Image (cartoon, rainbow, N blue to C red):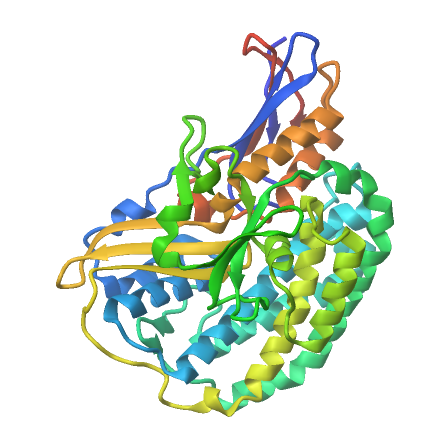
Length: 474
């Protein structure tokens, strides 16, 4: 009997997608596809807009990642103006990005993923969510909410809004941090660190019970890409691009975003609106790479802050040096929050961020530029071409979730092969598929820039392409 597996509403991923699982004649999984079914159009309708508007426009791609696009667009604008951003402007941008990393990672861990860890992969889906977590452990849930609020409030103190701020602009930022804002951040830092250590210790204590997930939720060799600092330290705003392999070897280093087309190719498939970036020298799809927290911890040598460096050392001991299982994304996020909190502490004690000289002004001096930044989910590229008046002629965006597209597809296939046999599909399997995707914390609105609403659907197909089994979650 032909049926369709539907997960509706979408549970704990940002956006809408579809998964197709293909079986061979013996009823075993042959392949699986993670289709992003939202329409992509943002790059096209930016054409004809003034370059000055791009930070505000692209920040509205998504309500989860507005800071990431805001900063990357502003950095691209810096290059079009050919200006040097004042030191206060750069440090304030860094402060906002650290607030963004904190709030986004806290959302991913506490709200989206911890219900699986604490309530069980096969628990009742009606309560396997943040409300179930609140009922089961109200103190932990409340602490997670306040940690996310801490990051969001930093964004608000700087940009006057938690989302879609127009604060970072080509040339710098509009205003410095007030002394009242600085003091609020200073006062809330101890509580935020305490919450982070609570989550970190909780997850480390649970790791031994998740060995199946470690082995099956996206464990495979790949490249890793991200920004690192001058001495190989963890970086989220500046620095240069680096690729490493699954043995920790540096494959390519000191790469500039200006030349991204030399080392990043963008393939397309007819069954998804999300592009498939790959490492060009290795070809498609062999050039699969991962970005985001897992990749950043694999490619860097150290954080440069004492507490995060201690946790990074323990992290590497626990994961076996280089983390090749995407399940460790959750662990990496927590270590990154710690590094972000230490970075925030250093910046609020830096007198530069009080300077009123935080923006350089100029006219159009370059007609093409590429900006890069680390979003919470991974490396983000903005590429603009403008005319002499600064009117956008062409835009290309490579989004963090897109960079992980090949890896997400491989993860779905690995999970399906482990859990599906004899055409049988259970609700627990559906949650594990979603949990595999949640490792990457995908932002599908960012990656495809859609409007509208669709559910995540899963179809189980035989070797003739016929839908053969189903389960519907109401």
